Image (cartoon, rainbow over all chains, first blue to last red; front, side, top):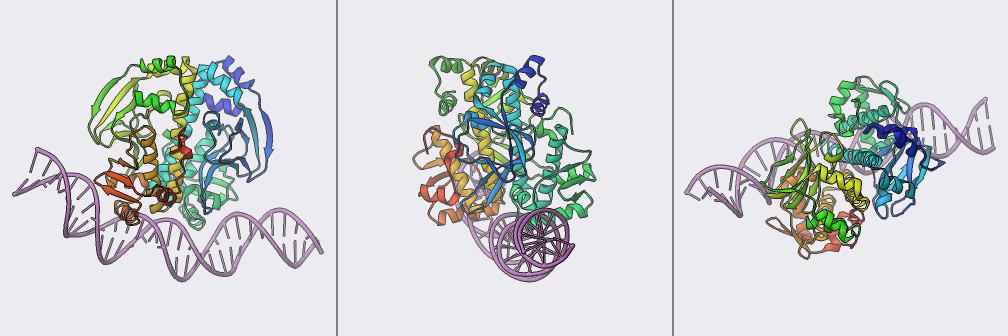
Length: 237
Length: 237
DNA sequence: CGCATCATTGAACAAAATCAAGCGAGGTGG
DNA sequence: CCACCTCGCTTGATTTTGTTCAATGATGCG
């Protein structure tokens, strides 16, 4: 929960009382294994999911089995707000590795939204940044080459990890297979593999297992045409 | 403004008092010519833009001139809420045809968000549907073929026009050049042209000028793998 | 009439997908 | 402790989809 509060404060300063209110929000914690849905398309859960540890994604399956991952979610993300306000979920939310999840009852969030204007606004910001990330993915997949796309994604995840203090200097764990990366980038697995090799060959990154090390942050940003604006973080990454 | 209220009521029933509150929101109207920015990337406007008549899009330009359109906006859309809560805009908003726009001061919306919980929630829904549309564009561009993509987009715009009562039965005006469609679909102009010809050849649609006529709604939906869920409209299209 | 913008066409080309194997590390059971 | 199996990564060859380049029609408007 602290991570989440920290993330909100990334956008808005909160008073001590407001922080207390957030800390008193009830939730139950559960450990979910890898590759498990937290919510599936069509469901109407009664709780929102707060990622405490691990790594999740939102995705949609097409009839013939193609899958598009539409976002990654890292600790501190409340990734389910849409279930609070809208009807049946139009996509699925699943873990990519074993993940510790907090389930926050809708009523608790509803109360806060209705009675604490400043927290309401902080949640608005959180949600609008989410939205900005989707937009950026549209740009990324729509216009950029495989090489640019991959570089951009690596930059985004790094920036987001860094913002919640979960990245080592210029390195982080991206707990995702190349097939999953492919689904996120709208590319084939084979092509992702070749693209990552190119990025490595150009000395921009190293991969050891699932640990990404960024050797040349400026060049990687340039390669991915990455501009952290859209993450709307207070501290520039 | 009536269209906007109607759109909000698509998600939530509002009381007479709430509708009055919305109707009393001050705004200034302006006629904006085609191909003009309403707000440009990096700006921090003091108003939100409500489309009254016309057709707009949000887009981002890359350094080398490539452009990705990330969404279309039709009358009744309040397309700028992000400027209310977040810092400098991370993309641009521009007209595609001559458009009548209402400029609503941020303070007015701020007041409403803070003091009218039910309208706040209606705005949340409006914004979350926006978000769902972005996600669906990610899926569309990431996984679907040119043919499927184009079909899907035609379905989406039709459904949205219909929801605000701006579509004739199975036909509507899509006031957009093929080059603009290309920027929205992440395809080249040439390929969009050929794809539209295919859709016409298959008897799914007719184009006369910029008027789209859908001959076989079920088939077009099937061709685009379109499922209106994500628009979260009360009345199924 | 003449210009500008948009739609259309054909041919050559490039990026990425697909198909089909092989490799390597980690985990399991005998 | 080793054989084996699985999953994920890597590689090469081929095919597909969509791009680019370069014209040529159409249409509308001053």
